[in-house]
Length: 413
Image (cartoon, rainbow, N blue to C red):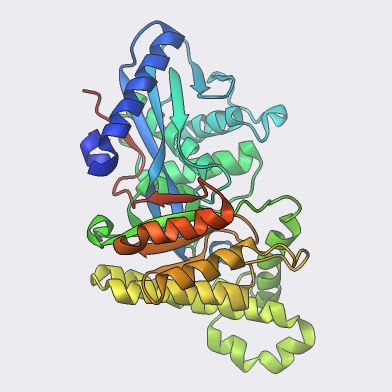
């Protein structure tokens, strides 16, 4: 049964803060509904560690659930109505008697709620109503995927209240993706939901997207002597959609030369052998991105092996190589359409300077603007934070840990 205590979920340094956070959530729930919650659930944000821009071409990814999460205080309701009040947002109400796609709900949290419930029904699971108050510290726009955490949270509530935790974490991730694709209207991959739902370090092989191969990796990051930093460079993602879209388009175009739809079916050597002809048909950037894809798949396997062997140095070295490949070959660290704005490049330079051969650093998530990721040794935490906040402003640097559990019910004391 997927039920864990606060002490199991959170590290000792944040436990007291989390206890206060949960107590505040209980109090807010009581104000809303006039009673105390009977159940509690949590779902973490996620970070991509390896496999930058590989999932959409059926490649491999290394991801991890992180210590920031969205939590929900809950009571079941027998009227079939799902009512969710998220801190800072209006109440969402979804009648489970009508789970059809609502065009007017596209892009809203109500669409995610309705979509997850519809996914449960589609797969033969039981659903019902509930009232919930949620609060989240998963940073929006940080690449930690707050929407996936919310979807996984709703899935865990329905799983705990009505299915006795019999729906697997993998299936909850797939139903969450279904909600985001079909109801919310965003054609996302499965990495975000899978990392949030399963937790810890995981690798995902998307060779068959309908049945992704998932492996969990047993590695005690808390004992590694490093912290995971996410640095928000405060860059805007506005008008960057064409930049993001060009990456899978260019990769798939190269795959088309080999009569394949995606690069997951193509080897590095095939690309290298065909370079003379490929250069006549495609841009050099498209070819570099295809080569990045092939090499990144290998790096994911190397990262997995390093973590499995407890070889932290090999893992960190591979993370750095992944970051260099993203910068030089994938070319998603700044937008070609806006070369004056290079906040990510500046953050990577500062990371390299402060870490001075230790730790690791790379672009985080989709790239072009937003955040970098860094594994920082404990002796350099203050120096790293100071350098980043001096440049990008106070509160731009977030220290995280890798959470060993994904979506879960939380035992209320």
